[in-house]
Image 1 (cartoon, rainbow, N blue to C red):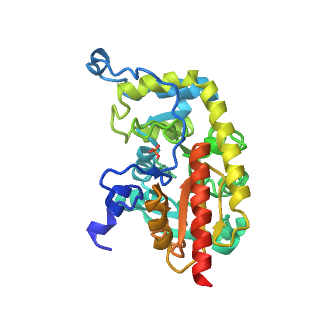
Image 2: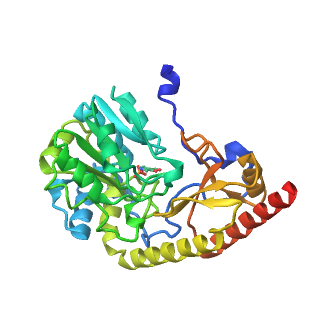
Image 3: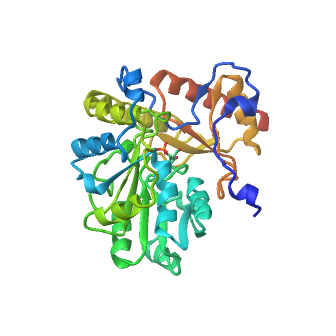
Amino acid sequence: MTRENLYHHEHGGAPERRFNLNGEPILDFSVSISPLSPPITNAGLDTFSVHRYPSIDGNGINDFYRERYGLDQSTVLPVNGAIEGIYLIPRALGIKKAALLAPSFFDYERACRIAGTSVQFLKLEEHERFMLPGIETIADNLRGVDALVAANPNNPTGTGFPKEIFLALASRFPEKWFIMDEAFIQFVDDFPDASLMRDVRAMKNVIVVHSLTKFYALPGLRLGAIIAHPEVNRFLLGYKEPWTINIVAEKVARDLLRCGDFERELRMLIATERAKIFRKLNGIPEIMLKGHAANFFLAQWNAGPDLDDLLFYLVKKGIYVRDCRNFSGLEENYFRFAVRKPEENDYLLQQLMLAGRDAAACAQ
Ligand SMILES: Cc1ncc(COP(=O)(O)O)c(C=O)c1O
């Protein structure tokens, strides 16, 4: 691997670039962000606030996690979106070798390689519907590594994992780190029980990376936290840059405490729409649904040899989905789409079904 592609980003998005859209409007199903925005007005961006430094360690985010989830300040290390945590942890802990799930979010590998951490992959198998292998297989794969980095739910497979598996592994291997990216956990049906955020006091080798950008539709503001044992957080803080949470983000984090109605409405919307999409597409041979534990679906185009046929068809209809063929294990025509507002989902469903029917007719 050359230095250049070692550090190269491999994100989706940017439909304008790929499809030369020239500013034409497009429904972007490729980003998995809440379709509703929280009722935050005047985000605090006034001259007075930006003339001051924010708190050095992002106290507004601590306030959010304490009041919303009852988490003690010492277990919460505010970060500039989950991504800052993903990059900070291997660097600070000096992890020599990590096991990563594949397919999964690309930045775990990139963060490890930049930190000088070598990686090996624990494959999630298509024929197992991208679920985790059995615990003994995972344990075998942990031989010789000092950390497992995993996402729950996993992106882009959309699979959710029982946290008990990670807790069992963490107590069996106290000398290894279990780093869990829970960026999408607020969308799962059994949140907060599904989260490890309340287990970190008892399990010093479990580190949760949490995000406020997906659920609260704030990717532009960058808000998240590392949730870990106080001693681990103190150590990580020693390696973290100061002032990475800006003053607007700090203020908005506190405003999120008044978003109870938004949270209920969003959870209801996602659950209802997810069930509707599943009902309508399940059993359609041209579109094979895979994981959908969070606010997005992984699916496989099964109506022809080339996913580009579907992608171009959808773009002509003003729809953009995430081409997942650049993920190892998803080369065979996999794509991902987010759950959006009801009428937008209905339009996507209609177009997916038409594309499938046309492709099936052509094949005859
Ligand atoms: C699995 C996963 N974790 C973390 C992130 C980054 O989240 P944040 O915006 O909080 O940095 C992403 C962004 O797409 C993601 O998909």
